[in-house]
Image (cartoon, rainbow over all chains, first blue to last red; front, side):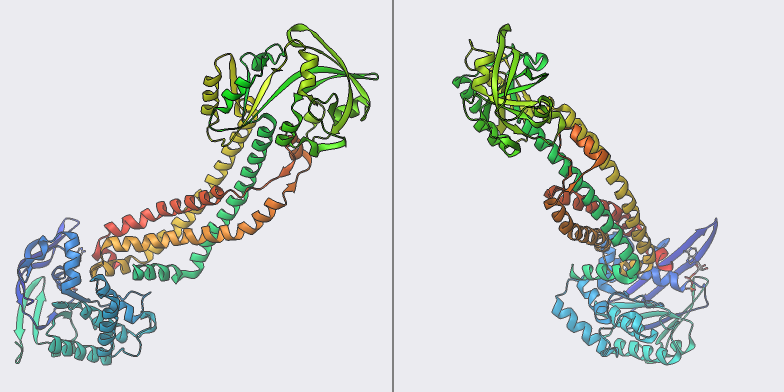
Length: 231
Length: 407
Ligand SMILES: Nc1ncnc2c1ncn2[C@@H]1O[C@H](COP(=O)(O)OP(=O)(O)O)[C@@H](O)[C@H]1O
């Protein structure tokens, strides 16, 4: 399934006694297979929002239910397993493990899931071929370009067969060619695997490709537009 | 596990120079520690060896003898007494002797010395006295002759086949006088012994010093199969013999040797502690840096689903590897050197030699190859490395993902 239901979500930072309402009451439902962009000016709360949905940060108030499980109720160890099996992460700074090769980076996730060595290497190889890194399996991240690293990290995010993938500004460090390639790749995965993608951006080209655009300002949703042809 | 090991191992070599420097510091510490301990333990072994050779593991005396050192506090060595002692499980050999002071006279010279009445064959087996012969022969059973230490022979200007006059006080006040041919001269490396020791057969000494009390001895020397529990062993044998007798372990008879060893050992251990403290801080510095540098990586790993416990294993492996590499290389490097020195101990000269001679020890610098010296260093370093690893282990179990990710 993979339905995310967010209700009455708040995150208030209490810095030096002047509270910052980074997320200020958000209600949203995101369905299986959506390809959604979260947009808004810098400081509007996009990262804070995505971190809470990804279980990396705790809401001050409100709940995030994924397939009817309130992830705020999960104890720390369960939450780690939950992230492992249900959420794929793509970071702005790629954040691959520098001492592992491209193949090992992708296989690593499946090893955490206790998949057998043969199986995980096979799937990792296939995924890397799909994202166009099939000829650079044994390179370490330091020997790959930014665009290549980000494609490896998409493969890593897909490796656990997650319900959805969260990407915070995935193209911010990429040139326009790599940006286009990455978006096409994400769209393709979205179509082929029916994986839900939620990503934040303030890049117009990225917004153009999104099927649903949710605009956040000052921690509140100001508009939520579904384009034609989307589910 | 394989991947965790891979991450740890490759993590170590990301900064090759730093890891090499840290490992080298462990290597040097282990090498130095092994060298130092090998000498120390080696010299303790030598000291203990010569002490035990001289005194035996245990000695049985009449209960007053240790205080008075007088021939009057002697006792009769009987078959039944011997059987009682041999009844104790751990006893290897039981050898009686009659020790007393005597005055020797030859030509114009007169001098007091220690006369040991021994069973020549048995005593020679224990102490290899005949190896020390420089002239003449060693004693036979019921020998009439006397063997002098070389220092005494020089003092008297006496040689083999000359005869020496002995005067002493025998058992219960009788006067003991006799004239005996010198049959052999032995050389002790230790001046104190070389100027003080003479040997005669037990039967002859008994005949001269206790003609009316056949079988009189001052001492029974006991060698044990294992020297693990000297004190309990002494107590056990004492209880077999009764309170007329006193069983004393060499560690009490030669307490100054034990004290010397203990004092020196404490000094050595303090040196080791300082050495290891420095090395531990070295390892800690490296581990601290490795942890700080990778805060973000650690955060990402936990974010994508790695349990903190697994991360703790990674940092633990890293720290232990530094220790292990240092320990193994240190042992491998020192082993051939120590083996060589074990076979060819360094002879000592000057002050150090004098000091050792004062403690009745041959002046060489012996090395020991006891397994525990190596295992102790190895285990110590690994424990210290593990203690060092507590810092990153605690860190990876506590850090806040988002805060670490921003670092
Ligand atoms: N750890 C934090 N402590 C205090 N304030 C924070 C923290 N993280 C973010 N903020 C504040 O919350 C607001 C939203 O930030 P963020 O979610 O990063 O926005 P965006 O991703 O849209 O740029 C900003 O005003 C920011 O300064």
